[in-house]
Image 1 (tube, rainbow, N blue to C red):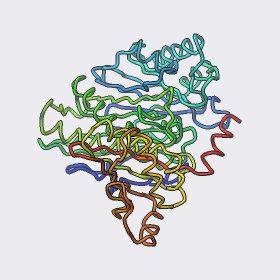
Image 2 (cartoon, one colour):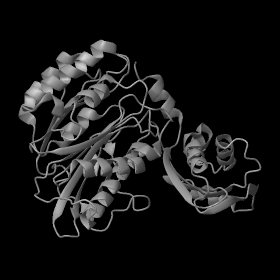
Image 3 (cartoon, helix red, strand yellow):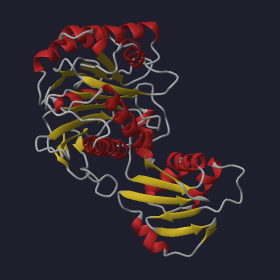
Image 4 (cartoon, rainbow, N blue to C red):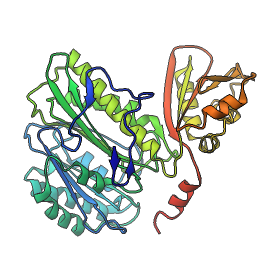
Length: 421
């Protein structure tokens, strides 16, 4: 699939295969029934371009769920949405790029509230059913008049096939669009639609990444089911990625269910399981696109850690994924597995002698903390591809986790050194 900013990879058969009964939607540029979207240029991005977007659910009995960054310096739009919005009944989402409206104090809070009120008036829904999202530079006051003007301009452009305009409205340093649409054939027979749009390329760290993600479905979900499924799927997707180990101020993921298909997903049913598998694949796909688009990224890695102590397994996986030494080796296609051992040891202090096992692309290089012979030329060739798999074994059995991560190269430094200039 080719997009305006570049080419977004399709579903990865290796790491995110499509589940049974799930196919790519034949009309990926059209939202599920009951939704309209649009985006316009309002002059917020210094470089120009589309920067104000709006998603509207026309179903008055919409159900929804949301997840937010755990940062201690949450941005004004996150605070407004959490404090003043019915998170289980979000009808509309207003979003701007080019300015995060973070670290902006009471004025920023007022501007976020202004966005919420203006969007509510634009689409004719109560303010507490409007979520607010922003992304861009931190510490710069947002000019709310531009957002209001943008909302006025976008209203007549809202349409079912407005996904592309919305996608452009949320992009910052993204090189390509991150979106996908699925058709899900439920075990009971009916077909429902799922679509999602995301942004993110830098300041990416579990808990859960510098990203915005909006998900729509024409299925009917209870608020409890929507919250359960979104929570589980976010933990398995956006909480499993890292570009630079940095936690954002603005992370937001929102799921909206219009029910326009007339199909209800009953709790604890085979339909719920199939729907959950589809949502999981959709969000994991978008999460991998974020890692793939990591600022300046050349390759992405997946580290899987197994062992008998859950916290140690988790710490080791995140240490490897966030290690600048591992990430630069990945960038250069260098199978320097000593850096992996170092990262694990740094995460698990005072455990020596730690009998760690390491494999790269299926080639065993370390057993019980000791180097073993292997074909260095073969391994070097294996790590020259776009994706590299790392497997780590710790003592014991019972726990397993994974983290997807991008490499770290010269372009990341250039992008972030010049970001505000």
